Length: 51
Image 1 (cartoon, rainbow, N blue to C red):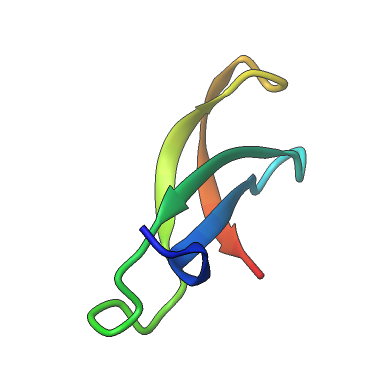
Image 2: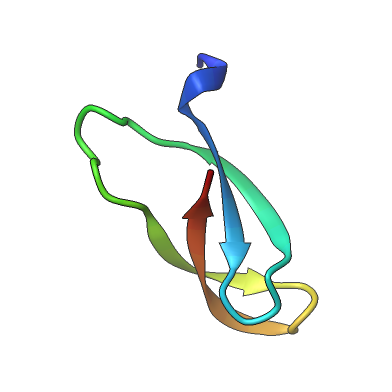
């Protein structure tokens, strides 16, 4: 996978970057938001894509 498709996922509560993933930028134009487990909040929180 190319590096330009790599995105960071940031917790919306504590603002910690906990996940890195890939995204097809041709199909998904908007920012990605997924509910993931945050190890700092110790809870499932929504994670948003950052720059």
